Structures are given as structure tokens and as C-alpha cells.
Image 1 (tube, rainbow, N blue to C red):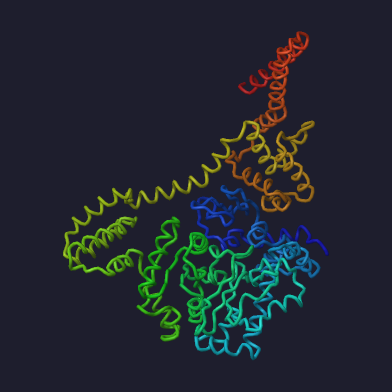
Image 2 (spheres, rainbow, N blue to C red):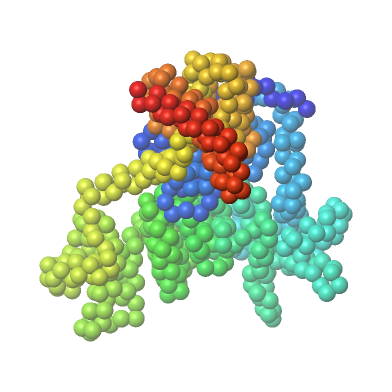
Length: 625
């Protein structure tokens, strides 16, 4: 297959802004000249992921990931380089010649042949089989009737690729026909294994809900029994944990909801799959649900990266309110920073799915928009449950709990508003409530901020994440390595400096990674006249080299090139550093010679050491002059 020409790759890369592309997957905020966000490649509480719009590359100070827009897609979507180029080209409306498009198979073959690739392919085929049985066969008739009773239209069945696993256990036979590897079948979670090692379909006589990852690939299933009468089996059965499915890190409909959140600025967290599907049918496409288990920290972190606001919309009964309480506490514990949490409380005894079926989609949308409340509003009502507030002791406990929640509110104006509500409702002195709030804040270690202080903290936080991260890296560098970084920065950005340094006889960097970058840059400049960080990153196949280049680009150097500075860097690299190494080596040999009482060798090494020390002093004198 033909290799995509370099100029075509450049044209495709230059057709997009890396901030726009990464912004589809990561919540980015402007911070100085860069954009910042939570790194999508590792768990973190404080943003350390930076995207440089001017130079079109990204770098994480936490895990060291770096690269251009192609590298991001390759790492995030687990695709090959050619596929990443084609994806950008397609999004930009650039048509690639057919011979380059054919390379997609080569670019993705390594992933497709991997265990993960084979497991995803198996799940995709299983989803298609279950969907076909539901929609097109007599065996799927009972499941079609059930879904129709639940208000599922043909469009919703198609959109969510709903299916049916019949009693006949057809999946294993289907896989045998496909000659799927036995070990892949065992690891898929789609089968149960008996004592003889025989595999049997896990999902039998169940409506199938495919579970997808963030790319929209099927990675697991949830199956619901058609009838629970005279049946001890669980109503819902989920896939077990597999190499491609972790229920703590998976959210139903996330791949679709992220797109909806880009338009609305929020996501809705529902309790069940049917709530999400019904909400979608009602025009609410940004709904998600956890995997039939408790909401998890990992899911909070994923949501935090995907949307600036989360609206928790659980059932309106007592169990639903308790679930909202647990979800709020989990979000608070995760320290989601700028993500706003809101609550939408449905009427008691009804869930979102039932509300849509009874009242229709338009009324459901209107309810969501009109009944959004703050976390404090929720708790001021939630703490009333099972309390008789006409009793003084009950009222005191209620006020104590409410004030603890209000104390966490950072806005003084908002705090004052809630205190006013409590004072008015219970005929209390607002000043007394304010005093009580101050005492509770002190006990909890909470210090209310003025708007000015809040802004200063934001600036400090931003600086901690941009500048100190660089400074901390620089502090750990030796004088030699700092000189290497500075010199390589100037060499890459200035043809004059490049020519000046390469004219030095036998020039080379001390550390291997800088020498490797130098050699790759020499190759790069034979094909390109001008230097581009984003383009040069294409030459670097190792994460360590990409990380090193990113750190070099982060250096706060003087944009005005001064040749004496360049010469100083060369002197440190070419002369002073090797000289220091030689001195250290001679000193060690001299110590050994003294131990062995080898007088002749001691004299020779002493003379050599003196000469080396004289040279070192000469270099230092030249530095100060």
C-alpha cells in the first residue's frame, strides 16, 4: 500500500486546531497562552494536561504524555497513525486518494489482531446477532411486544441497538461457525464455562442492552428477563469484568451523551438504562447511567472530564432521594473543581422513564429545565425527611445539618440568601444564624472567600500548574542537561544557531536522548525548510522523546538569540562536562593507586589531575570574564 506523502500529512494536520480536536474529548479551559484540563490518560484531581494552541501540541506534566493531534487520537482512541490521519481528514472535509485510504486496514490490523481488538470485534458481532433476532425473527416477537409496552419505538430500538438473546442459546453456535478462538470466547464474559470446559451462552431469554465504550464500541451487555414470574433468576444480568469492560469505569450512553453535553453544557445522571433511553426519545440526548451498581469515583472522574455541569435526576421516592445524597457526597469527595452539580427531583413514586411515558417528551424536557435546584436546596428539603420540626430538638438538629451544608458554599451572597430563607421560615434572628455558621465553618476548617480572594486563588492555581511544573522539572536538571535543553531549543528554532553549532568539530550531546533528538532533527531538516513542533513530533516514535521535546518547548528562554549564550552551552556540553567526568575518573584511580602504594602510578595520575584541574579553572575564568 502507498505511504501517505509528507505534504499530505502536513496539510491534514494544519487543517485543524488541536484545541478543537482535543476539546471533543477533554474539558479544556484557557490558562494564559495555553489550554488546560484533566489528563485523559491517568487519574488526577488537579489539572496537569496542557494544550499549546500556538505550537499545536499537548503535554501532561503528570504522566509525561506528549504529542501532536495525530498522537492524541492514536493514544486516546487506540488507533494507528494512518487511521488518525484519515479521521482528521474526514472531519476536515479533505479527500485522500484511494491508495492512501486503503492503508487503514494496515494501520488498524495490529489493534484488530490484539486480544482487546478481538474481544471488541466479538461483542460487535454478538450485538448484531441479538439485534437481528429481536427485529427480524419470530423468536424475537415476545421481546418486541415487551419493548413496545415499555414505549420503545423502532427508532429507539435501532439507536441503542437493542436485541434479544433467545432460549435456544445461539451465540456459541454462531461463534463456532465463525471459528472464533476458544480463549477469546472464555475471556469475553459472554459465556459460562462448565466443569468439562464447555462454554454456554450467558444470556438466555433476555432483552439485550449493549454497553458501549467512549468510542461507541460494544464492550459488554446487560440482559433483562422478559418475565420474572416463577423465576428465581435476577431480573437484570450484566456482563462480568473482562479485559475490555470495567463496570466502575463505564457509563451507559456516554459516547452519545458527550456530544449532547457539548451543545447543552451539562449531562443528566439517571438511575437506569430505560431512563436514559426514554429521555433520549424525549429529546434529551445527554443522559447517562451507571452500571446497575452504586455510582463510583471512577465514573465521577470520567464525567468531570466530559462536562462542566452534572444534573442528578433519580427517582422521586425515598430510595431515590437517598441515592441522590450518596451521589452528591461522592462528587464532593472527588473534588471536581469547576464542575457544577445540580439536582432534578422528580415527583415521588415516578422515575424518568415513567414520566416520559405518562406525560410525553415535551413536558419532560420542560420539567427538567424548570426544576433544576442547587445541592443546598436539595439538602434543605432532604434533611426534613422523618423529622418533626415543630419539636425544638428536631429543629436544632435540622438547622445544624443545614448550616454545615451552607458552610461549604463559597459565595457569600449565596450563603446570605440561604440564611435569610431559614430565618424567615422559622422566625429566627439572621445574625444569630450567621454567628452559628461562622462557628461551624471554623470547626470544619472552612474559610469563606471574598470574590477577590477566589480570583487570586484561581490565578495561583493556574500558575502552580503551568510555571512551577516547569520550574520543578528544571530544578532537578544538572547544569549540563539544562545547557543541552537550551541549546537544542535554539538549534531547532534558528537555522543560524543550527549552522553555528554543527560547524563545531565532533559536536555531540552528552545525554543519549538529546543526541537522538539532534540526529532526528538533522533528518527532519533534510525534508523540511521550517521547523514545526507538531510536525517534528511525527518523527518521534518513542514516548520518552516526545516528552523530552515537549519539556524543551516549555523552556522560558530569551527569544532574542545571543551567540555568547550559545557558545557557553556548547562549552559546557563539549568541554566542561567531559572534563568533570575525566577529573572524577582520575581521582578514583589515584585513590586506588595510593591504597596499593604504587608510587610511580600515583605520580603519573597526580600530574594528569593537575593538568585537568588547570583546564577546569581556565574554563571557569573564561565564564566570569
